[in-house]
Length: 149
Image (cartoon, rainbow, N blue to C red; front, side, top):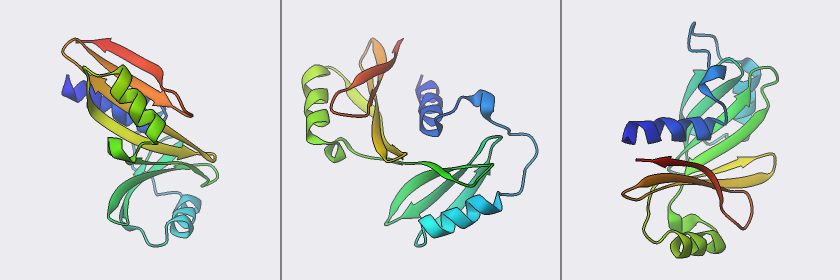
């Protein structure tokens, strides 16, 4: 079950389904994406690149935090940036809502995604009976997916 949740989280982070992934031939990293990354994250360290059909994923370290950037293959445009966070890093209203509405659950995954000037949060909660993935792009949580165990 943990493997399933990890796979689901990776899909959420990428924002694309596996149908869009091109894991066949290794392709050279898009030079426009490389130039954009260097400009956007000039102090980044330990960058590793993964090439997919429609996008490039860069895993890197910035200010001692592992982050992920997604660039368009066609234009090299930055599509999104994400990072894992702790519940204390959530906006207060979202953290309070989780504690109030999901008392019997524990957090198994939590990340922040910034795209097009908007920040969204995704949290995976579990209890003995189910797994719930919530998304927030504002002040409230919305159920993204629920799975029975």
